Image (tube, rainbow, N blue to C red; front, side, top):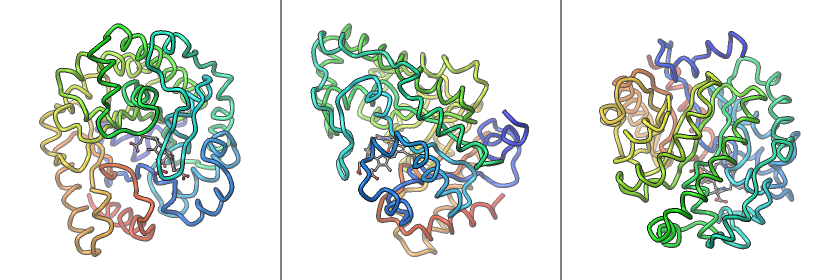
Amino acid sequence: MTKTLHDSVFVRACRGLPVPHPPVWFMRQAGRSLPEYRKIREGVGMLESCGRPDLVTEITLQPVRRHGVDAAILFSDIVVPLAAAGVDLDIVAGTGPVVASPIRTAADVAGLRHLEPGAVGYVDEAIRMLLPELGAVPLIGFAGAPFTLASYLIEGGPSRTYLKTKAMMYGDPDLWNTLCSRLADITLAFLRVQVNAGVSAIQLFDSWAGALSEADYRRFVQPHSARVLRGLEDAGIPRIHFGVGTAVLLGAMGEAGADVVGVDWRTPLDRATTMIGPDRAVQGNLDPAILFAPWEVVEREARRVVAEGRAAPGHVFNLGHGVMPETDPEVLTRVVELVHGLR
Ligand code: CP3
């Protein structure tokens, strides 16, 4: 890694080092809120676009050019490595990932193949194309955590209740652990490709872990996520761990081996810091819905987030979850400018 990237405001904040202002990026900054994204995606399926290094490069760069964010995030999806490992799935616009044959039995789990790095060669290629274009702007790689991936594979698509997922978790813990262990292998292999290609940080998305109690999270989920996060310790780059509705899980998610814990808008960052402890940075946590309020409200709330973030050893400004497609991109640019002016 070059000196510039190691010294970037984003990486320094992840490490709890002094920064001139909080770094800013937005989850789902590349996506439907941008007209240039909608244009380039016209007639190209989501999975197909993730497999084309030229499109990945352009889409990843779009929010960097437009908003001046302090980090780029690779344009891809958490189900890309599953598709590359042979799972028959699609990403349906407005719905999310849909799996043709959900995984529910021991035979289904046994049929889940490992991810050969060569099967995601296009990710390696895209990152190598991106790095010179990004210059001093760090690139974040990412993957889905075993619980969130398992929930899509078992439910067959998005879920509100995670009934079938929990049925396997509680009803057949051995099968659950076998599945999550395979998913941890796939996730590790996918992240390793991104690390080897030169990303400056990784984010492990356990978006739906908030469906669990702390005890169940620690028992059924944390060991698998910990294997992924600790497996990347040797890379020497910041590891961010994020989920939605995780107020009671923040401590446990940090202990899984994260350098930075992502926090949604429900938990103020100062309170989150008490739960996470003094040796990890935080990321977040403006409510994405606040971007639809009058600017005075956006400004007041963004200032509050920055003030509360000062309680942590390091703070990366972000939303509490992804940018909603209907967001006015000009508001995002204004938020970046505002936060860059705050110390
Ligand atoms: O800018 C970025 O943040 C990078 C790109 C990114 C995408 N997906 C692109 C995408 C990232 C980091 C993801 C991760 C992802 N995918 C997560 C974890 C983050 C989170 O939101 O909690 C999850 C749960 C998924 C699964 C998934 N894929 C969902 C729920 C959806 C949305 C469905 C919809 O259409 O509303 C997708 C599709 C998807 N992934 C889109 C994008 C830009 C929208 C598809 C499109 O533009 O056609």
